[in-house]
Each structure stands twice: as C-alpha cells, then as structure tokens.
Amino acid sequence: MEIIKNLLDRFGPTGALVIFGFFLIIYAALGILYFQQGVKQGDLEEQIAKISAIVVKPMPSAEKLRAEYDEVNLNLAPLTVKDALDKIVNIAEESGIEVDPDSGELKISPLASPRETKMDEGSYQVLSFKDIKVQGDYDKVMAFVSALDSPEKMETLVLTRVDIKQVEFKATAEEQTRGEEFRGMSLVVMDMMTDNELSAIPNPMDFAGGVATNFMGDNPNTWGAIEGFPDNATVATERGYTGTETPRKGYVLYEHDKIITDATDNFTTTSYTSMLETEYYYTCEADGTVRQFDGPDVTTATEYPKNEREARRREMYIVSLAVTDMMADNELSAIPYPMDFAGGVAANFMGDDPDTGATTEGFPDNTTSVDDKGYTGAKFPIDGYMVYEHDKIPTGATDNFTTTTYIPMPITKYYYTCEWDGTVRQFDGPDVATAMEYLNIDTVVTLNIEIYTKTSEGD
Image (cartoon, rainbow, N blue to C red; front, side):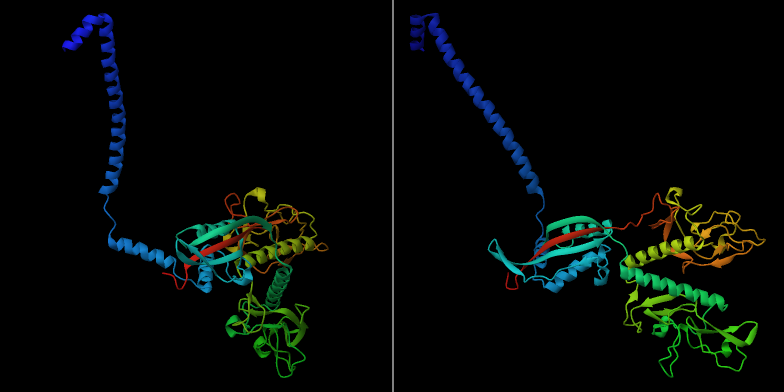
C-alpha cells in the first residue's frame, strides 16, 4: 500500500486514472469470461436434458431384440427364384391384378442367374427381375406398385425402375370372333325355344354332363351317332309326334324336325342357324343359358371369357353390336330418345322389366311411343327401341308388330348409356356422375426390382 501511495503522490490525478483503468479492464475481462461460460453451461444443461430423456427410457428386452434380429435374418434368408416369383405374384393378386398368363395383365421375364455382392464384410445374393410388366385399371396397377415399394411386404425388395404409361386397348379380333359367335348361338337357342314353345329344354347338353359340342345338328358323316345342340336326346313321341315317319330326335339348331302344333302327325325341318359346325364348343342349360369353350371336354377346356376383363370387353362388344343391329333392322339413322350420357342414368335392363308395372325399362330407347314408331293397329306393343324383346313395327304392315331380340340377356352385368348415333359407353353403376366408366385405356407399368438375401453359405 505504501508503494501505491507514493505512486499516487508522485503522479497525482493522472496516475489514479491509469490504475482505475487497469482494474476496470480486468473486471470487464472477467465479465466476458463469465458470460461465455454461462452460454456453454446452458448448452451443456440442454444436452444433459436430452441424454437424460434417452437414458430414462427402458432398454428393449432381450426377447424383443432377439425377435427383431430373427426378423432381419428371416428377411435375408436365402430365397429361391420360385419363392421370389410366388411372392411377387401373390402381391399382384392381392392388388386385384389378374395373374392368369392368358389375361395379359402380369408378365414377368425369365430371370438371369442370381448374382452375389459383398457389403460390410457380408455376402448377399441379389435376384434381379427386369421388365416386369403389369397392365390394367390404374388403381389396381398403382396398388401393386405401392405394395412392392412397402417394407410391409418385402423389406429387402428394392424398386430400381418404374415406367408408367397409358395405352388404348380394345377387344382383340379373336375376342370379337368369339363374342360374335357366342351371341349368335345364344340368340338362336332363344329363337328355337320360342318357336317350339319351350319354357325349358328337356334334355340339354349342360355343363354338368361334361361334354361341349360344336355340331349344331346331326353330322351326316358319323354313322350310329346323333349330334346336335342343345338337345339331341328328346325323342319324337316325347315332343308330341303322332305320325308314322321318323323325325330326328332332339331340339337342335340345324335341320331341326319340328312337330307341327296343329298337325302332330306331321313335321317340318327348320334351321335356326346356317352353320352345322361352329368354331367353338358349347353347353346349354335347361333355361337356354349358353357357355362357350375351346374344346369338347369341359373339365380340361378353356371357357370363354377367360377372365373379368375379357368378360367386360365381351359384354361391351355384344351390347354395341346389338344396338347397331337394332338400328339397321328398324332403319334408324338416329335413335329418337336415347339413354345418353347427358341424361345422367345408365341402364342394365336391355328390355322392359315385367316386375316394375307401369314403368318402362329398356335400352337404348324406352321412350319413343308406338305412335311415333308408326303403329296404326289396335294392340299394345311396348314403347321404345330396345335390344331385348323389342316390338318392331313392320314398314309394310303398320297395324301389326313382331317381337325381336338382338341381345341374348335381358339384364347385363354392367351399365350402359347410348348416344343418338349408337355410341355405347360402359359403367359400373347407374349414376354416371358417381359410377366408374370403363374406358379403352389401360395403365401399363414396367418395373425392375432387386431382392437381397443372404447366400446359402452366409451367416
């Protein structure tokens, strides 16, 4: 202290200021250091809080860790090509994709030999599937892609390529040929039943019998055997014949010996089709329901349509064909009151439903009155231009009408609208505002995928 006092006496006020400044600098430095340490202390406290939150969590049990370990090993277990294909096909089927090779909805190219790769000192097998093509409705196709990309299905599956495009599709020429022949056979069975006043076919060649035929009448080249469709067994006496001649058995479509109602001792030979032999094979139930096959043994033959998509295309084709035929037969260049898209309602009743009383159903026109159709008679034909049981007014005899059918089914599975020019559209329900329209557009996705597994020698 004596030294400081001497310095103050020697330097006076200036010395005091220097000394005060020295202590002020030291105090400020200590303040800055304290502030910095305070910030660091806050960071440390935050880190401690985070670590504490982790530490207080209970550790997973040994059983849980073992289960997770086993699941990883299971996902990486060696997988054969067949097992991998089965998994992919199952995912497609669960997504609503038709996996039948004939459907064309799923195509998987042959797999090259699996390759081996090393990662983190381990050896793994890689199954590479390239150019997998899936085609169909957008929602189903995208559900398949999403399922493949989901770890819930296959954790070790990796999508390495996804190409998406839209393509137009229509019924193939073969499908059209099948559909047209099927429609023709169904219609002539109905004609034969009506002409012979049958509510049921007595001895039909039905599916339960196990045999389909492509002979619509008796084949003259086979001795001792009687062919014919849909019934080649019912004898003449069972059909009411009282004469002395020998009419052929059955109710057949080609060269059928029909017993005359008012003269049962006589018969006439009538053909309901011009074809003795058809390209495809058929069975028929007692009510006239026809089924189509690619061979005579129904247990091994392919039945057409082969899948839902072909069935939908076939029905669309048959409805469109029926509308075209109805317009031509009635000399219509335009349908007067069509059930068009603008009307907001699609129909699946192709003719009038007798159970609905005064309401008239029918497609594509259930509104045009019989007067507007030119009828001048005293009877009561049904209004409209329909494809099922349509009351047609003959041009040269407008006081009369005949009932004509252009489609073999009174009710269709799908719903339809029709424009004035005969253009048909197909839906999955009657309200076109909310129903899904089936367009001739498919979503096509091309995929490359890789599936990683342990090698058979791996740990």
